[in-house]
Each structure stands twice: as C-alpha cells, then as structure tokens.
Amino acid sequence: MNSPTTTTWTGDPTIDQDDMDLLDEVGFTHVDYPELVEPQTWHRIICEVAQGILVSGDLHHDETIACRQLDGWQAAGVTRIVDCRGEWTDANRVAEHAPQITYTHVGTHDEGGSQESAWFDAGVGAITDALDDPTARVLVHCHMGINRAPSMAYAAMLDLGYGLVEGLDAIRSARPIAAIAYASSAVQWFGQRNGWDETEIADACQTVCDWHTDNPINIGWIISRIRTSARDTS
Image (cartoon, rainbow, N blue to C red; front, side):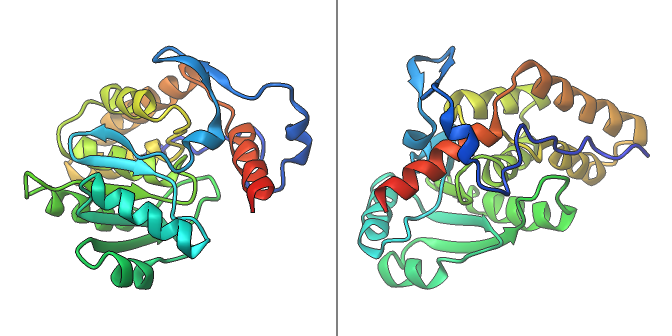
C-alpha cells in the first residue's frame, strides 16, 4: 500500500528561524479576513473549527497569564481539553485552577513525517466521547495550534462525517495559521478504521496532498513570527 504523503516543511520548524525574521512581511492575506493575518496574534486565539471543536495554541508559560487564559477558556464554555504536546503537560495546572474541565493528554512529536494511528485513536476517542454531550465544547491544542492540534481536530471531523476537503477548508477558514501538516496521517487512520482498500486510501491521501498544494502557507515563517513575538514579550 502506498504510504500517506509525508509532511514537507517550508523552512525547518525545528531550528531557529532568525534568518526568516528579516522578511519585510508582517502578515499574509486570507480570503476570509479583510486585514493581514499576523501569526503571533493567532497563536492563542480560540478558533471554532466545527460545532463543539475548538483549536488553539497552549497555555502561556507565565502562571498568571495561563490562569487568565483558563478563565477565558471556561468563559468560552470549554468542558474538555485535549492536549497534543509530547513535550509538556498542563494536567496539574488545569486540575488546580479549572477542575471542572476534563483534561486529556495525548502527546506526540511535531517533527514532520507522519503520526501513529494509536495517537488518533486516543485523541479522537476523547473528542467524540465528550461530544456525546450536546453542550460540550472540546479545546484541542498543541504548542502553537499549527500542526498537531488542527490535524487531530481534522481526524475527529472526518469521524463525525466531514468530507476530506470540507474539513480542511473549515479548519483553515477558522484558523488561517493552521497548516494541518499531519492530515494525510489522519486520512490513512480514518481509511483503515473504516475498511477502505489500498486504492481508496491512496486516492484520499492524494486529495489531501493536492489541497495542500493549492492552499500553501509558509510554516517556517509562521513559526518564526510566533517565536520572535514570544522572545520579545518574555
């Protein structure tokens, strides 16, 4: 069977991107927004990508700011957090400051390539179980809300009946900095889960690859802008 298309980064997000900071651009255009999209302003914004599914970046490292964020998440009706970061957990912080929010940690890497099916099993299971309650609102986040969290949200949306392109469009429209880099892994997981044959999975992965080609964003530059802003405000 053909393996899912692996992630190709525009710029390596695992290294410091100081050279990219020299770019004059401070934002990029998006059809759904009248003003330039500035990546750093979207980092920790809560974006509703589907009914009851929200995507954002992580809690701030400063305890006071993080607690304000949690207050904001509660005010937005968040009932469950699905944290996709392999490098950190906020289990204790959430339990102490927002015990009424259920916290689920499904950590993984953000190194490009692919994600394991077991990761999607755990994350999608947590999301869809929570959504059995029609009043639930699930916040899926990683560090920046660019790759892991949007990809997990995409997998859940497929499981909930969204089409391949429909789900990608909905996420990018709601969160213009979402690269959804592991979407092909999500599609392979979904296809295997639903008994698709090799050709069906390969065709679906190609549809995702074509969407990324038609809707490119510069991941390295976006990450660079967020990192630069974090350094400047720390």
